[in-house]
Length: 346
Image 1 (cartoon, rainbow, N blue to C red):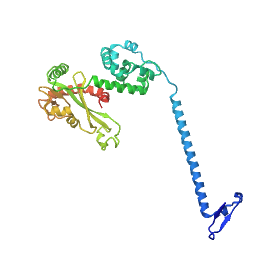
Image 2 (cartoon, rainbow, N blue to C red; image 1 turned 45 degrees about the vertical axis):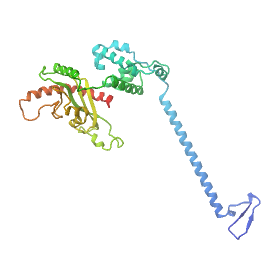
Image 3 (cartoon, rainbow, N blue to C red; image 1 turned 60 degrees about the horizontal axis):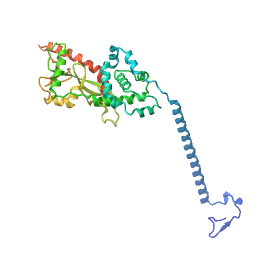
Image 4 (cartoon, rainbow, N blue to C red; image 1 turned 180 degrees about the vertical axis):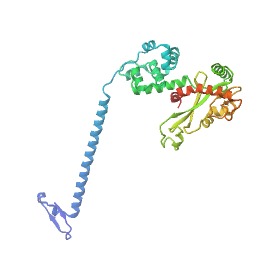
């Protein structure tokens, strides 16, 4: 091998055997190139070692997750006929907020929408029996009635993820078959609702024309992120938690006929009512006479909305008592139902 050094021009030194080569015979430039090669190879080995370590770590995590799930467990579904026969009519109503006949009617109406493909459901469970519509509706109603999800999955023989999937399917079917309606132009329905209020009122028919009870409630939510809203403080209400302002109207039988969740939790009930579509319609005079809606002192008395009289004692005091009794009575519906029913319509 021949190489030229930094010496005199044309000076060439020959080495006939590589074994006789020594580092001192290398030029400065050649030494630098050899150093760069060695550093490059060292960095490459370190990168390969890091990739191998990450690969081993990911594989170990996958094995750990598979091991934590364990074997496929075929759960024993709830025997609905046995449970239905075991519960008396009174206990059935306490657990599902409806009697057995109403439950079966609701189940038959939702069956086509919630059961889906029975073959696919059976294959997903490893060949086990599919989940029936009675079990789906039972699990959903128990959750809406305040049951703990741990108890619900154990009672019905379903998994936790399956429970939430079932609830969303039942919610969508309920919204389709049982929409909330408060039609201002349906005179027949308004007259029926007014008679129900007159028959159920403590005034024994003295207060007439009432077709609905209006109230608001704060639905607790997690703190909104900047992606959700640029003004998260608007959701922090006077009760010191983040919420959405829910406005709702129920009839004399505590059945909800209308609901609106459009405003942040710090919004006053009156403003939230004015922002709703129904509130704007009633303010515009679209609720026909002599009908009106009862509301508490948080709202402003206007055409179509009756609230207790505020101020010094007047001859209106007995009427205030009557209105207060009615409002307190129908507030039970909001305390019991709005929080869970709002999940369906958010």
